[in-house]
Image 1 (spheres, helix red, strand yellow):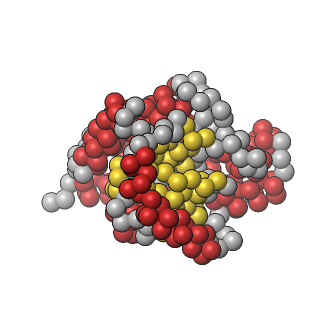
Image 2: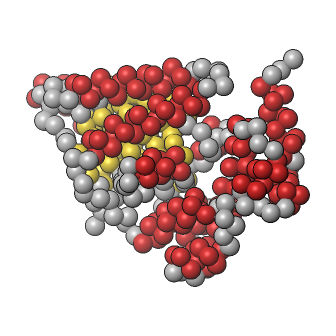
Length: 334
């Protein structure tokens, strides 16, 4: 059975519920319509294609809930995001939410977290507003590692906050998300650093709330657990030139099984996931450090810089030098 926690749900004033009663009935009817429209195949919404840009897979993304609703609609069929966490924080309105195998009805202020590959869908009315934070999984894992927590600590959860009893917590979240929104509109070299710091503070506040309930999420099936473990092993070893067999030995599964799991949750192969992580890190180092190409190749576990350059060009259609020069040109137009 799935264990998804709704943490510290407070009893909101009866007046608030009466004000929402007609909207609630309408939303629940609409939610049934959403579920009837759901196809059997849960869609993986590609974050890189949604936001675009060569570094979209490695940076913090922010958008208002309204803007994403304009793009995707307020009736979101069940979907998931491979290799990304999402935090939805609603400041006004309500949401009918399906989080994995469970359904919830939440009123603002509230938020919910969806870890990588966890199916979720929702319906909201036009008066629902808020923020959406999208974070690469390795960023979250690094934070959890610093807190000495397992990578599955941020399990699927939804938290409804009481304005009467948790006013200070609500003030913190609204301040941090408004700070994040302001930084996202900036166009400075420090933008990503500021976004990472803001995102880390938001995650820390969520962590503090979740500490009051130590009940852990158990993935619905062993395959999702293995997929998450494989991604975690990639994060730990992509610089060590691990071969597929090294991952298979650690996971104690066959190559065909791992390939089937990766195809199911990310529509790509295990080898492709490893290559994408190597290319992602190479791009970061080319864009955000002054390291030589030789040093970057060495840092990524390539003993031959020439082989690294061929590998990079095959994957990006640009040599490492051309990739770095292209970014400098676009950052400093004449």
